[in-house]
Amino acid sequence: MLAGAVATAVCVCLSAVPAAAADPEPVVSRGVTIPAFYDPPTELPATNGALIRTEPMSLGLGIPGLDGRPMPGTATRLMYKSTDSAGQPVAVTGTYIEPWAAWREPGPRPLVAVASGTMGQGDQCAPSFALEHPLTLTGDTVSVGYEDLSVYRILATGAAVVVTDYVGLGTTDRLHTYVNRLDQGHALLDAARAARAVPGASVTSASPTGLYGYSQGGGASAAAAELQSSYAPDVPLAGTYSGAPPADLTSTMKGIDGSALAGALAWSINGFTQSDPALRAVVEANIDDTGKAALKDASTMCVGDALFAYGFIKSTKWTRNGKSIADVIAGDPRAQAALDTQRIGTLKPTGPVRVATGVHDDIVPHGQARQLAVDWCRKNGDVTYAALRLPNLGDKILTNHLVPLLTDQGDAISWLTDRLAGKPATSNCRTLPFQP
Image 1 (cartoon, rainbow, N blue to C red):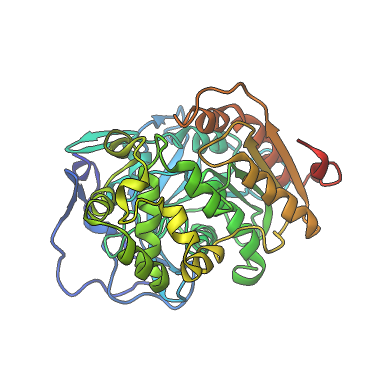
Image 2: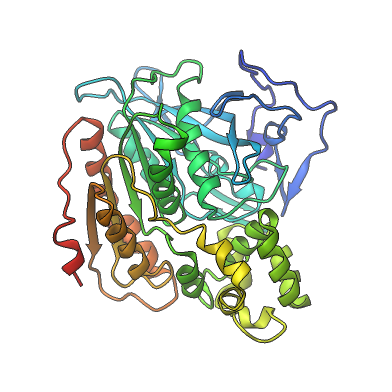
């Protein structure tokens, strides 16, 4: 069981926050027990990025090093304070990893804040769980830590890594606010702040910081790059990798509807109806009983569960009038306005950014991801755009979306490592508007 592998002792940091008044009842999500560590306290610190608690954790794919230190690094589970899209304080969990490898480039050891791709909406799907348990087949949960490879490759460069669990993923106080631009951007930037306060961490406020993410994570890293100047100017951002970012959610909803990842449509609706009254009113008026049951069921699922339960389902089966959810939202000005506020690309990103997208990606559509790069170029952003030209590997079955995650990973990490080492990027904005 997942819970059996988690230490029960919780190290409360110097900036300690009072714990809940009574020990919480264990939360079980689809057969997986969520450790008490993930239950947020009733009071939170005032400062964004402040640590609430930490504890040691093991990496599921780690091995002992010759010098006695674990490879690829020493992991610490953490909970820290962030601010959600409504401006309210929120507790977020994640993992900091102090690398075994030395940083051999000039300057202090850098930090990379990693935003994971889609893991699901159940608390047992949190990226910190996946780092500790790369494969979970427990109860009704099927979860694979597919982001572990990118994390380990970044650690091998000598950079430290902090991975956010996002708002509401892992923590038991709310649903995960899936693909919410502000929640994700804030959580990623505050994870970078929290990493600097982890006991024993070698990174400091002077450490160059990179952002790394693909798919949901690409949207999170892109949002964080836009928000850094106003929300976290103290995070010294050296570069951002944004792979297959869902920058335009209207377009992305159409892409995932009826695909193998159709369950993700339920996660986005669940998250936005939790935080946005306008969208909640529209959904309640248009989703039928079958749809409401599906939304509730999917809210506890990881990607593996959702592929089996809702793969290739069309949202027309969930609405009262037989329209798709995207069409329902487009037909209501309140709902469309709420979704438009989630658009990424309206602000200039801080520092150099690399946007990469597979030309045949039909889950997170290629066109809207490329448009993000164009929008940033028009704002005089320092943008490197890479169109990943692979064969069409099958419509709506995830292959066109997932394969670029792997084929571009080496180039993405090399590009980001160069930025962390202080090497200048070469923007291709001048040619981007003319590329097919």
